[in-house]
Image (tube, rainbow, N blue to C red; front, side, top):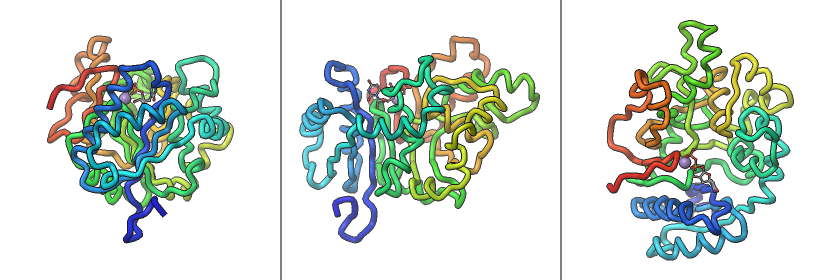
Length: 300
Ligand code: UDP
Ligand code: MN
């Protein structure tokens, strides 16, 4: 059983989405940086799952051959078929897509950006998974990230870092205007800031067991939450987790910002300059940089 170590412990499972990469050299370079840095610091073997199409298989193999000098010690490479899984995910997240997509229709292909929401259903054989964007740069051992699962409370089922910009201060502005003094959309450390899904710790076993989590996946439930919080988003799974956290804060373990240090500063010059730094500040040694909104990652 390749998913377990000789001692029977579950090896860290890591999923990276890498689709439509064939002619996208920018995406390929980002992915290269992500995996090169991951394996540079990693001290334990991992199961690396690529959520991709047929063409991404070849590209991934070539990049990994280049950047991982001793692959047999470092990883087991597994492929998750995007077409097959997207279909299953779409059946579960169809309603979410209406509220959290940037396009008007609930397109089948966009379901990919909602994969994590239904991961506990479509990956029944796994119990814990780290899901990563392909625009990251590691500066620390992934073993330390995996051990963040030990910090989950009994109630938490997902580990996720705060969004580092006032994105959700903006998205929730109607609710905030109607509810003076609310924590919804406020900055750290006390606010319900909302999340960024570039680095996700998914306790799939606890997600499967959670009555609350599975109750919001039932038809009509997410609609109620969007109405209560006057919410309309376009950022996929991170919108869903953010909205859920406003109602059920305890479901989430807030991952330290050092594990998903987002670099995008778009909102700084779009009406939020006075509060920007309250959200953007991240103190301490950075473990993972996230070059979101195509922001270059500084040379370390
Ligand atoms: N992605 C992909 N193919 C694409 C676009 C995105 O595989 O054509 C994946 C990739 O893992 C990427 C993630 O989706 O990191 C989220 O997109 P991105 O990181 O660009 O969003 P941002 O972090 O800037 O919001
Ligand atoms: Mn990203």
